[in-house]
Image (cartoon, rainbow, N blue to C red; front, top):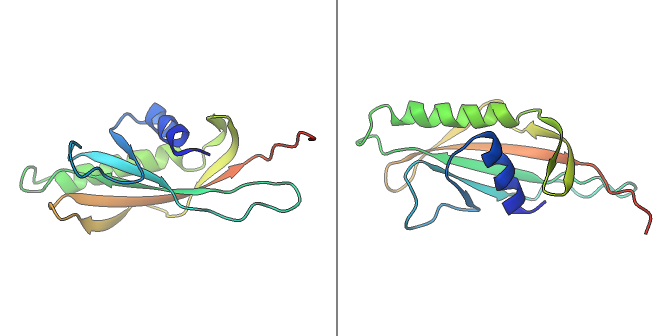
Length: 135
């Protein structure tokens, strides 16, 4: 699974500014998300089933700009979390996905960044059908 394919898929479910792997230092809106692949589990040795994992970090506005920023950020994180959790039988790029499983019951508040913007973290694993074509 490629990061671009994953971000394109997530964006098709929930429109929001997403960035690959990290938040850019410049020219990024305060409210945005970073998506990164985080490794996952070993490839199953007999059939080749893969289980990559990924993390989504959702960032909100500074609380001095908006006193309700933390609850708005949390709401966006919960929306993304619920759209992805236990989603079954679809494609991400060319990969045939069995299921996306949340590794957390809820998005986790991990604190504010250096600019005072709240960040929520969500972690998921993906079960990808093996390609059983004979070579």
